[in-house]
Length: 126
Image 1 (spheres, rainbow, N blue to C red):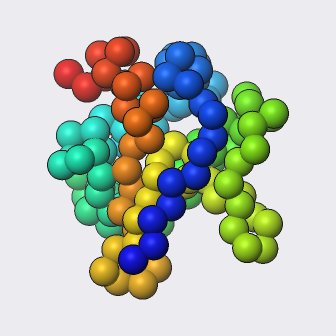
Image 2 (spheres, rainbow, N blue to C red):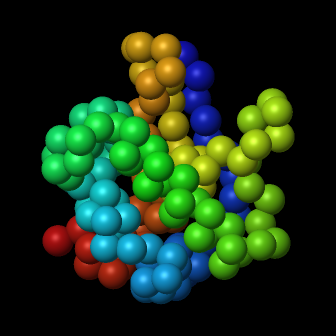
């Protein structure tokens, strides 16, 4: 199974700044992070997270993470963001690490350690 742990160089302090900026992290994004934080090892598949968040499918979360990634890129244009072999940005790899799930095309999302710490420092984890 593949593991995707791209280095971004975004500190806990920068994550706190981003989390506090409502033009970057919308309420739905914060809800997603809170639910993922509560999962064992802060990791889960989008298909499991979707019903916990009351959304129709994992595709909704994939789109949400795409838009979140774009907003983060707009705030941090100097960061080298991860890309796939074709050169397209892997938006999910901005807030998360990932690991292949048992079904091809599915992944476990895992909170980046610096983002997890930012969530704890902002008391979002309570």
